Image (cartoon, rainbow, N blue to C red; front, side, top):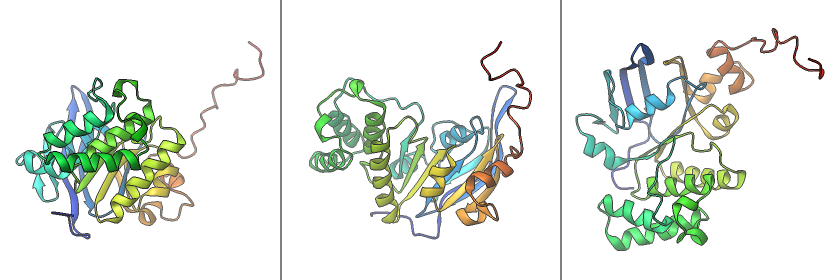
Length: 263
């Protein structure tokens, strides 16, 4: 892989990152160092600040304070170099819906400056591997959620990035599409590339990731290998509940009226 990061170095380095929206603090001075060549999970409950953090790391949202480096390049001082080296599948995926799947990939590849013949070759392979060949001439507006996630992933991978950022890539995706996406990502990281994805599904993270950062209320509660973060807990889910302070919470203790079919 041209320009690939050497495994053992940092794919992403975040220092003192803050983001506020009015009086609301979304990200509260976090520090992160994500190792290259790993499948990395950024996990946390809804509203933890995961999407805001990924948006700042990928140059989509300017932080109030702090610095971000991706493969050694400052995201805000050298944005062109960073964007050439990353692929992004954001939350609330917005695509050019009046293009077909193949047209979308052709357009994305040419925007990246790839030669037309190479774009066509890579697009054909991605459409085949992601089981979209039969829908390649169908308009994206008519794609299902799973198909949209897969064509978005294909677009993010087309230029062979060094680091791939995915925000809830399996949300709303059917099991068959999820397995296809998973297979592509596992092959991608096996080549020495880095995947960083956010999720609140601990079982998924535990089965995929070898490195995890746990986020809650805009802060990093733990980061390290899966074994380090899990510690003595039997599962990542258990460790996560303890880290975010949700252990032992009885959601039904005040719902004495619920159940039994009576009013």
